[in-house]
Image (cartoon, rainbow, N blue to C red; front, side, top):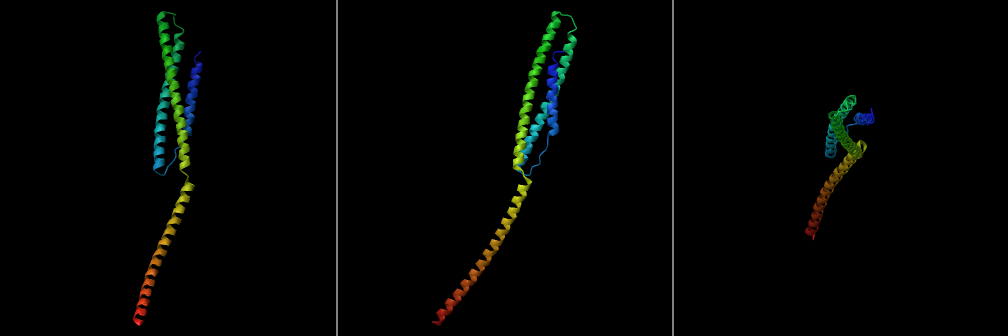
Length: 175
């Protein structure tokens, strides 16, 4: 069977996407940016699944075509059977082109998934988030202390003004 190399290629493609599916990991996000990224990743996953399903169907059709092609060789060499074989080879060629296109799309989606995972990893760091929360609490505490000190100073200023006015009035009445 001379088309055996094509079947091997189809099996290789199937193994490639299967191992990719096993390696998928779902990231968790905490915020609008990560939600949008998670949504995009989910859309790409769904597209990948659809393409994988399409790839499986093409692979089955290719295997069926190859098995039918092998059985047809034993028949007579009439013009009708040769025409049928040409049609089958043309259909097989078309299916191979479709399979290549699906494989290209799958590779593009895989690269996009990898890029999105990198972006998600660079955005979400629990340690950095905890550090920023701690800094925020420290700044809020400092602001509260400064506001309290400001109130105290305003109160002291009012008291000093009153004392100054009293002192000025006393001096005025003495003179």
